[in-house]
Image (cartoon, rainbow, N blue to C red; front, side):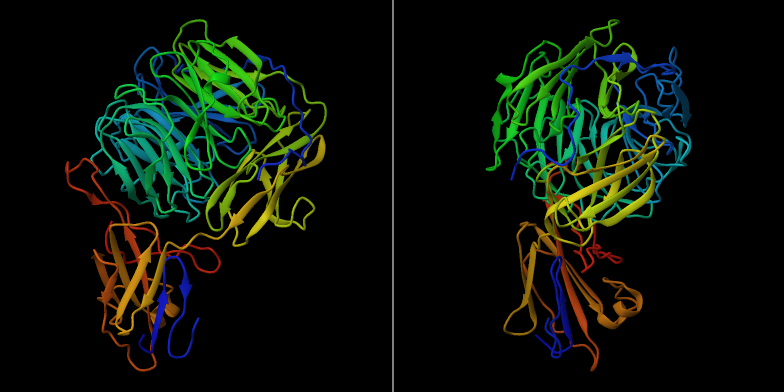
Length: 629
């Protein structure tokens, strides 16, 4: 290699110049408060306009920062403005913790799916949604896929959506989720098309400035309109499950690209996709397992993820009630073990798990909606009354929230996420979640801490003075540990209590898919790529310019030492550039996949370019002057 040259390799960084070279275990910790009998009461005062009658999605979480869960939806076929429901745009039902709801809304659009999260990193909850009725006459509600910023009151009126829905999506998008798919500590968006619509399956990466860039996607294919995000193979990268004709399980590579991993799952045929999919680690091995319903019939299915990447069918262990349109995998009774919940034909059933994924105890079963045998939406992700147990929201012919009735006897805190054995990667955004039992029903305030040395600490503060929303978007720090724990301390009118992760999780640094070297001629840069991408981009940049501006990639029009060698088909490039005496340049290599996305049938097109990797503090290097998509 020539003097004055550095190599910065996505994702490994090393300096080369003439001068410088450079398992599952028993639950513990939190005291489980399990109750093998659960009962529910209707908690729906003010849940108008109704969402009943056609499919939709409801997101559950505290959107106005008062510590009480709220409900968010973009409604069903009646949105916007059709009688008798008179729905309008992005809607929130603000909860008061006592089963009363206040409706607020913004915009004139709707009919689709949604999720909530902090997209712009300002600490206020925002929403992402895919819709069929993109009837907005302003920037709000005029696209099939949008992100809209919240103002902290439960209203979502500010579009933050440039670049979303720009790859041939047509007719309608539906189920939509947030997740950090490229591991740069912000929330990206995945959405699937409405039914058989041309929206297909699309992943867009957050550029942190209100613009979005597609990293993966394709058009067409039938869908069941259900989707969830988790980590199925426990490699630290987020994965997706979706009731999609082209595949159900999609494994992420940490750069925003996905591949199908359905070996061992049933094939119901072209027009029958898995319905009501959900994820959770039922057998405590660190890998997320899957539950779903049959598209036409009423059977419930559970499959466990094996270490070899295949799926084990344990559905014969699940009680079959004939009522399955949606599933959820959640700890319903507070014993620290995940349970299975089904909703269908108007009936809700809860089956208690024992940590094996194959033994089930009926905990509850009741007719949630006697007005109909339909099931149009289902979500279990919020504790409406602070008794430490999650509460279901059902939409059939009617719109209901249900409150589990076990009264809390003393203030208790349980850490529920990260779960046992989960692998997190430094620099990515992941969720911390906890449950609180508060006799007063007072949400209080929260302090979060991390131990990298087991349940005894020492403890490093993550955040303090937070409202007790029971979920926190956490940028995983630049540490490594095999016995990581979270401590959550809650202060309410009842006093102060703490809970510690009952089981360890791990934090690791991101893996390095690209290895770069100079060959013997000192002018040929060569690399290997464990992600087996189809094309590569090579960036040459001035070290001195980087020191001045922080730009890892630079504009050749303004920096003479900079160059972009784009769309390389071979894993090498010859560059005879020699920097001026006393100056240095460095190189970064990244790449992208080609995939037929249906916009030009039969012709593979570029997916999104991968990131430039992390610096020593696990911050993703920003690509200010990229080659292409």
